[in-house]
Image 1: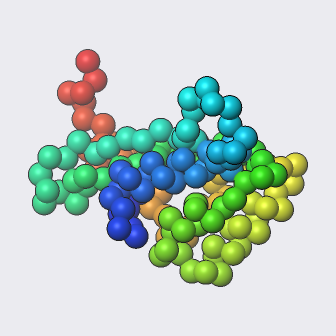
Image 2: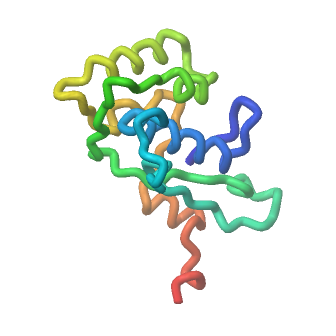
Length: 137
């Protein structure tokens, strides 16, 4: 789950995180004008309609923790790291160093998840109502 932070809603922050993750491999300056991909991962929304539900207006990035992210030499992590103001400066520096020094210019996505991130399994999300059975037709 992507929690709201830094003045962004959960949905907006999820979009920005996925956008900046894609920019690690494909910085804006190297993308051709006809490139349509902008996000590394998709985004899902919790279907809660009651604003007293803790999942109301929440978004999540369905990720593959073993996905290998390729690092373009012209990447800039400033915008991605700025999306995590709740993460200590020390941890943000460690993430930046890890990504910048990744062997073979790639890293496993699961290795850069900040300590403050909320990670849930599909089973946990099923239990929390993220995938209502009546939506499956």
